[in-house]
Image (spheres, rainbow, N blue to C red):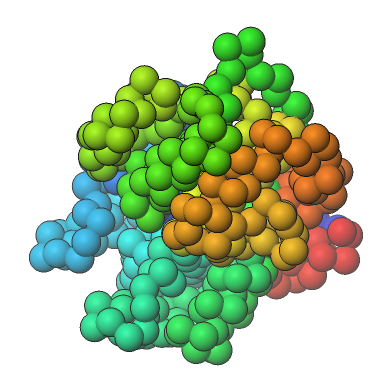
Length: 389
């Protein structure tokens, strides 16, 4: 059988932070090691020193380079100029695959790919929502607009990739039954992420790791922490680790409640550093798709307490005692207290690492994504890869 020609793959997304960035980094590394040429196009105005160091990690795998242009979160007239600039940059890279991640990345990849097709340039156009626009409500005017735009863009999409069953079901409920090829491919973490991380001698009782914005629930973390102290009748300690637009507001909230000395705040850092600071990881999100922090916490041997949102029950188990009602600080405090007072709670409640690894592996994720790319670019090669695996 003839050797498969390397693909030229370009990932488009807006902000190089959080789960989307982690997802793309894993695909970049796995597919570059498989011999393909990979590039990234993302926003130039977001991210900081932490994200710069993560880019440095994957730069050796980016044979198509790192392209950064200003991409606003909200829709604005400047998007027209951004689209034209982006199209010219994408065209110069001659990709076989354009994979858009998140709402803005999906628009850029699919419109640019469609413009290339008008010019008789064959390119596969894929989209992974990662939650994003699917968090909108169908009952709001903005939600109706965004979800109708998702439906319209199916005409410019060769395949939709869903990262969990929840995302697939939500798309069908809010947008409609897809009229293009779809594939369910779970997020996954690498082999090196499945190594227990011991806690430091000065560890705190709980940590929150993530973006500091209300959607992720840092305010619920603060509220539940205070309620946990009252339930147990003693002071506790915690850390909030991350950056975001509402950082100062959460700091003021802690000071107002007299928690400023018991809840510390640290900037975003690599998760293995964060995980050494506590055994108990709290994920109090109001909405999610398939958050990497839950997979990373389990891989590191941490106790994960999380909201029953998005694909989290698909990881922890639908009936897991570690799941709490979203937006309910009282329920969150109840479970936080249980983790500190009930012997053997972790062993009874957390899924076994081998069970997590069997489903949520970056190697499996990258293999299945590559199969899909090949099906779209070279159907014969895609069938051969499927048969081989």
